[in-house]
Image (cartoon, one colour):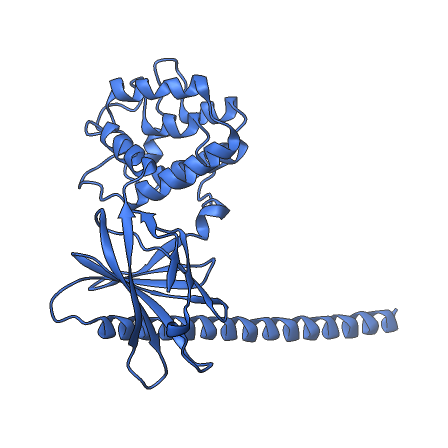
Length: 320
């Protein structure tokens, strides 16, 4: 197999293409391929999506440290154990977006550092670069293991919210970072930060309005505003416990992550992922069936209502 690319940032969530070689080919329409990434402390099992007879796609998992891991291409058939058909390596690296997210996370409440970030306002990057920055930094932020008690307003978040100061929310809004703003809103202190004025009297809400960021302003001011569309198709955690499972809605890819304990085999983890996928798909199918039943019921109810309405209307006309 050949992987492209052969490395991913620690926060993952990027597309990996898998080019199968002749040695990897396994006959049968019911054959399913999995990729297993084995690191020093954790192991990830990902399902794959068949693009052509010789090409697969999957999503890079988020990893716990910078290292080169072993990648195993496994094949499974119903009723048979999974078999390793090829092996390779893959590298997880810390990129600039991850560095930026770490810096910002440690700067929450640090006025000197947050005031320093305002120089970006004078050299605002093009919209395409802002979009890229927003996606990557938000992904990296989401992957960070924030310390217990971390707050958007910093360690001294008990300060009166009307005391003028810069916040991470000011930074995100000033650059028009929609996804990062959404992420911060979900964190402790996020909602409180939107009304905090800085030294110039500007709040994140007034900044969004002043700069014409309409979607951002709506996100900040609407109660229960939904997450950005482009953010909703990324991988989301759908199960956590002894193992965690993430689901990428856009490509229908599942990723199981578990500690690489002794005695926990690759085959066990693949079997666990298969069981979860089957259960999740069955639940989804039942939900669709239930919705269809409801739609049919409503259509019948509407038809009955129309029938009775026409009968009573005709009887009323007859009486007249």
